[in-house]
Length: 112
Length: 353
Image (cartoon, rainbow over all chains, first blue to last red; front, side, top):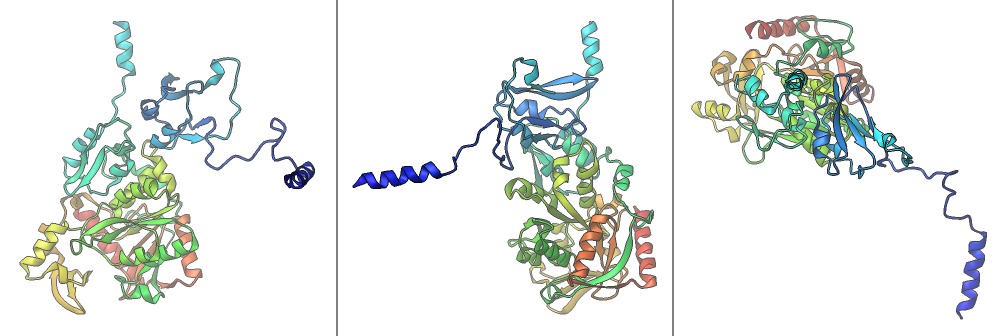
């Protein structure tokens, strides 16, 4: 009794469009609140260091660049919880849409 | 030694909550607006009747210090530059136009203080989707006439908050509920001049809590001569043999403070008799007409049941003109002596303090 329904199922799926996408050539749309690579807005940051204090993975360090203290995010350590965005009083950290973050060198993994 | 000197050179003194207490609260300047409470991202400040109080460890992010309307760091040039208005005026602030307006909605007319313009503007913005909610001072359900901060999400909430309360209220504490509790992205702040200055501060001052400022869509300012602490107002009424719970309306008209029970006026005293009951921090304020609001609304200068509306910025014009075009408000030109009397009273407040 099961055989005819099975054949029908196979026949229907042979003619269907595949549910998957061919990833590197084709990309799915991201959700509105997608947590990708951080966007640091330098003009807003005043270097208070709240993001470095709250980061549970110790991925954010405060570095002095040209006399201004500002955060650096190590993507190799980051767990993308975005507590830094929540805690930033000036809204200087934004969720980015970039998600292809693999790299050959550790230096390139740091968002400055 | 060299390293120590270098470290000393790079050492920056950060403003902690304690600096706010030293510079503002202990000098009796604190207006209890509540901006420090909503600025604090680590929830270390809470508001009491005496002022802000530390309830947790301060992380020295400086957001409370630079958002405070009375802090020495507040720069008036930056606040003034943020408004795109044509006419510059020292006493009334910069503005685009001054008109008289009143509501046409019958449900607002029955509860409003004068013209019901603020309530109508909020209803229009909520119905039109310009805002998700409004920060208002509503009436407490426990103590009569005690204003409590509230996030108005529906028209019923707005109507409940209608009418002037003459006590000060930490309205901006509700910003925290609105942004983190209800997760609103466009809010409208209604407040007296000190609260308006705080709300404008977080929009333009670089070191203030800009994240909050991004989510404030409109700032509606009220005219304010001075406010009275709720406890002292109740005391004053009791000394005159009136129970505050039975009062139906307070009003200040023609220089007299009037108290109504039902429709009957039961008390009218000159405002100067109330001087001892006013808030101490009001003595340092020179701003009558909410200089940094998008739209300022008040009774001074217009006739009975009309409100004076000062439109100051493009956002304010969008809100007010939209409400007029969609038939929420009716407008007329302000009488020629209206602006003069407004200017006279504003000058009196500026010179007195």
